[in-house]
Length: 297
Ligand code: C2E
Ligand code: MG
Ligand code: MG
Ligand code: MG
Image (cartoon, rainbow, N blue to C red; front, side, top):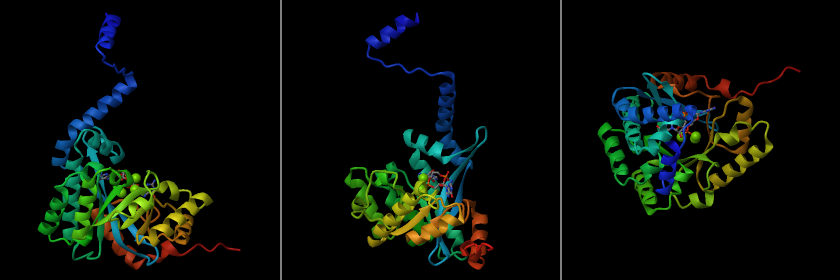
């Protein structure tokens, strides 16, 4: 009998979870994703896309962010917003990070002639920063591929660098000493402050899209972005506005003092070949992004 079983379970201090059918389905999906991840990495279901980071002061593009994509044979496209979290929880994130780093370093190697100035950023998770072996591995992969350390940037969130352990700082220091740059991702959404970040070897601050998406209408957002950018620049950090989608916002982020912009306004994340074409086109035809529209009287 169910009620007896439940009472027995409670008596033994067990807590029971109830799944409704909808929850059960999403639970099943999570299990499938976690189960399939390791093999999917080995069987070509993952790919990398690149999104330009444009220097809006110099009107040039010399950097990009690499973002992972998963095309699952049954589930179709799975967003990294969904599977990165599950990989973190199931202890599989380092596999993904290693795969990404190797894929991006390989791509950088083949872009050396065509795009010698290009730096690409790879996202790392909190667990990666606790791994003492990661800095050495990264430097090894770069050396093997003949890629300069200056071509690689690492992006980590505020909460990842805020982990209260000396390990994180030691690993970041080792990477910095080797010449690899560090960006703080999604800045403004976490609990950290610029006062805390000044003690870390940070090179770039990426202001979260939450503050950028309505910047042309929202005066408060504009003020927050401006104050953050001024302070960050005062501390010697480069400032990137994330997720800019339109030209009206561009004038605002420029006025706020942001140096770089990453967002759909310039380009969506693109497959390697398309990104390379975009870079070439942008180098000759970037004016159309910056000319402010003149309205007829
Ligand atoms: P993120 O690192 O903050 O990356 C920026 C996200 O914003 C990307 O979503 C990008 O496609 C999206 N984005 C860029 N411009 C715009 C815009 O103008 N409008 C809007 N609405 N969105 C824009 P994506 O690729 O879905 O990635 C989501 C998150 O998943 C990333 O946020 C990052 O936290 C994580 N992620 C992606 N790839 C990796 C990876 O290789 N490793 C790890 N650890 N995390 C990753
Ligand atoms: Mg990022
Ligand atoms: Mg971000
Ligand atoms: Mg984000």
